[in-house]
Length: 401
Image (cartoon, rainbow, N blue to C red):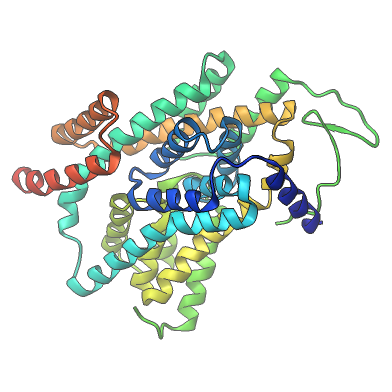
């Protein structure tokens, strides 16, 4: 039963040492949600650097479990990883509080931008800001992807093969496929720890004996209730059925928001994507901006909650399984394979996004300067770089356009 699984999860949480308080973790993710620029690639890199390498609050294996689970399940990658890391030592309550802290700052920002957009007739200034910020973000996520790859892949030749194949696939198709991650995990499991098939009461699966795991199953304040319900159902589907990180959700949103429901025009939708790229936190928070334009604050709130709710459930429900069985050889190797594939997809996403943001010599320079600053100096933080790029963009863009 679900209750039994949750009891096991609470028992696991209570027996593990905690190097930090829940309040410290909440404050960290509140800060990351406020100043964490660069989209999912950069955000998962920040989490690893800060929580695993520097503060040592989260173990390397727990982080990899969370990354693998986030990549296997549909929904926003960075948000799902934050849910899992909150769960590691503080269970469902920790996952909930960390998730709220991580997503709330960017939600407030997009609602404020939505209000300004409605009342002042557009975001013309954003073209100047995004011209430089978009290119600078490519430098940030390139550096994050490099560090993540170097740490995750190591010298394992099979992992490098998986990494390169998924990278090429992501670049070629400009999308991610969950079957690639599953296949990578199964391949690495079969090669490194092939199962000994024993049929009977204790059948082997991933090197485990089967035990009962439980039946884990799955403003405009007067906005028309029909619109609000349509927003809820549409964005729930977006969160539940779209695989991939960050901008992978954009094609699905465009079809529904512009072509089917006609909530936004083409230009308004492009502005919504721009808002997502220049605000910190999860990229999919653009759904809050879309919801605001469609139905005010009520629409923004419903769209944001509906987008993140499936990701939250897809994280906390399987989390007890990952916590209890993640260290078993079969599961550990499966997770290692999935993590390598996820890292390849992240590297491929850098190239895909780079092709859209690096459009001329100045944007190339913005990206290279950002990469050089991160490479040579540990004292310059990413938010400072993004702020500087935004200021330079306001000056440079009018001169060259």
